[in-house]
Length: 189
Image: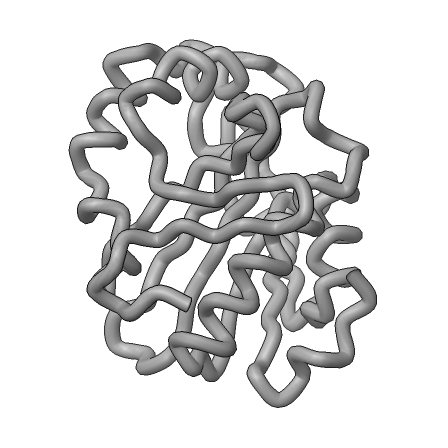
């Protein structure tokens, strides 16, 4: 495992997880513009190359984020180097040893176990190396694939905020999930 000051590079049987890079901007923008991918995300189908470049410039050199900062990790197919999606990781400010994560995959990469494989690698990093106490995630209650992914990974649903978020022109319900270090090895991925 890399030390906290090292650039993150994780590998699994099929995947490489590493910081998002300039070479990813076009593919990253393309899947973020897909209506099915953007539907439950904070961006819209008008996500632009300029938006992607701004996100890339804001990254912390591919190292684990400081409290209050996000890190975007590319999820690549190791064999081809193709960008399949990304994981986002936030180290919460004011809550020691607590992280939030997000998962986005290109539509063509969904339903193949890629999200489970990538999420397992990221959870191994934050729990085993960073000694995280807690990892959280949230999703729109209509996003059943992400809810299933989180549940398979051992997360438990802790909250449901009904019609609590005015999002893309409608009231939406948000589900909150969490996984404690003490619960980590009960997952079924």
